[in-house]
Length: 134
Length: 112
Image (cartoon, rainbow over all chains, first blue to last red; front, side):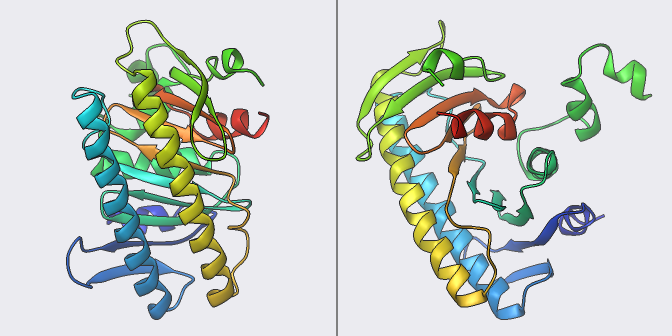
């Protein structure tokens, strides 16, 4: 299943999309118009470029500071959040558990989580997760 | 909530407090962490700048689309390779990505 479709399957996700680092190509699903998806893509791309530039500056102060390369960013609003990892964005409501689930899926698909996201999520409960799950 | 309490957030490597300009006021760093006061000060400045930009974007987005719920921006997180910086109004916490719980971090910062 595509990442965007996976995200959209989670209750509380308003819209999700993918943008190109260069150029103006994008794709999306959700409750926004094509024009708004285009704007969201531009907004997310420019913010991603900004945080990458900031990480470059951090590394000038501390070479192995652990921030580079940046995976993404989150804006946490009053009732909505915008999550970006790599070149994927997701607009979601601030319902309990949703932000962590969205970030786990994004990091598993385009970020740093290498194992199965289910294992990662359940690992926080402790114990032998693989034994319990499989 | 104090910096010592912020250090209780799961996976916390550092907690810091900064003023409205982004200058570092106080900090706590876990032993063994490579984060220096200099990096935390820079991090605080970038987070203040990013929250200002996010507020501008949220306000514009709400006006253009009619969608609500983005404003006021409660916090911002920069997700790095090994850690994530999660910041609220004048406090922030750096959390190991392996153990990160973004919601717990934002909730803790909301009580600062």
